[in-house]
Image (cartoon, rainbow, N blue to C red; front, side, top):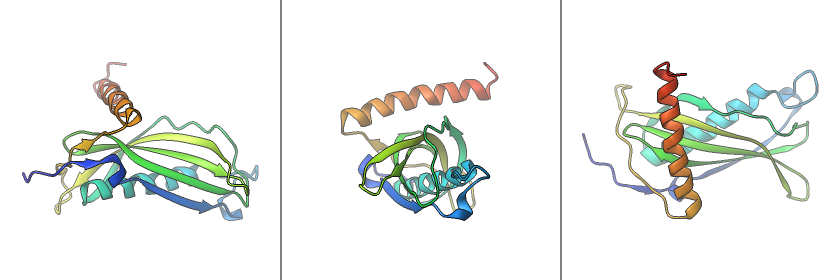
Length: 159
């Protein structure tokens, strides 16, 4: 196993701007939830790839709550950053906002995704350690450890 150098949270942050068109709407003329999930998954994958410099696959999506409706002609801003890493897995937080014409943003959704780095044979591969510099990054790391334990308990049937 090759040793991976550590990377800062800021090394893999990503922001994506996504205009909402009619094709993205459901029968209530609001953004189709599945479309937002797809955009979230893309942003999380891009952040994870930047961190590990490998292809990745999504293993799990946690905590998907829709806080605000999004209508046509809106702009959705998705911001992704790593919050926790294991040996081969990475937790990515993606915050989604609807942005008004004046630039004001309202939080639409916060999601945590777990992605796994893949080697050239499609098998899990080691990822770089994560350097948490700010108090917020350190708090996310600690919360990420707890979320990881909860995921493990769910997989083991403890709930």
